[in-house]
Image (cartoon, rainbow, N blue to C red; front, side):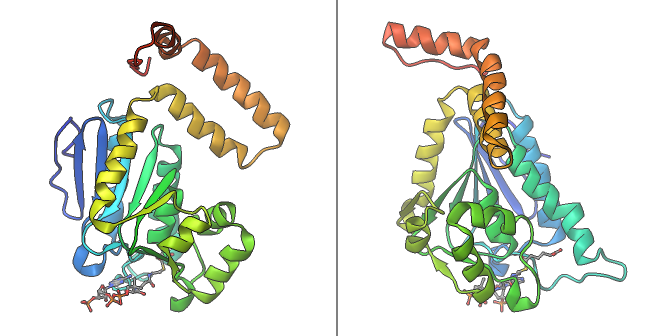
Length: 269
Ligand code: T3D
């Protein structure tokens, strides 16, 4: 895959990839189909996210959409069954690895939700660590409208993010959730004017990019683990991660910088 170095751009057909200032911006780019996910896009997206994960020049990832949508979810023009994968096979082979890769990426992922995020497009945003939304963004749990069940992790993420009752309501009705209501529910951190969304996302990413990379990666792991285990296990996991963080050069640098009253320079070591 092209586009791993700082300042580089890719030549993929459905994804734009741009790295600058330690921030990778991954843009879903089929705007005429509202960035609906076809197989090429799913494969390119997975390869791109994995590439960003491997690239030491990247400390934070922003995921966004080209044009007026974040993503309208599964491309409804694509066929399933016969010579093509069934829906279940598609989930196992493509969607589920995408969701797990975002969750397990050792770097923060910010979804800059620039417009409608529907179906699996919404799931991609839910899998991110943080969400910023433009004032025109909406989340649509559109699965039921096309006779499908919520998938690609939405049944796991949404109740945890906004509570089970609201999640059920959105999934049963398919009603759009506007950005301001999403912010009120805590689903998105902030709503900003559409024209400043990427500036705001880059500013947030820039702040995260100056934090200690190893500590951030382990914070992400601890938060994910804590969703699934008892308090005793979460405490034990925190202690084991802190053992690692406490031996890192970044911890020493952070303490020295505090003493010296200067900004720390973290290296990820
Ligand atoms: O293996 C598996 O299980 C598969 C996984 C499935 C998970 C899912 O994602 S299921 C849910 C799939 N998504 C949807 O059902 C959403 C369908 N789209 C819509 O409901 C609406 O388009 C939106 C609410 C997202 C936006 O509405 P609006 O009025 O702003 O735009 P529009 O006019 O409906 O769409 C604009 C164009 O995008 C249009 O194309 P055209 O007519 O201009 O050539 C439309 O067909 C296209 N488009 C929108 N969504 C999709 C799409 N094309 C293909 N697939 C789409 N999902």
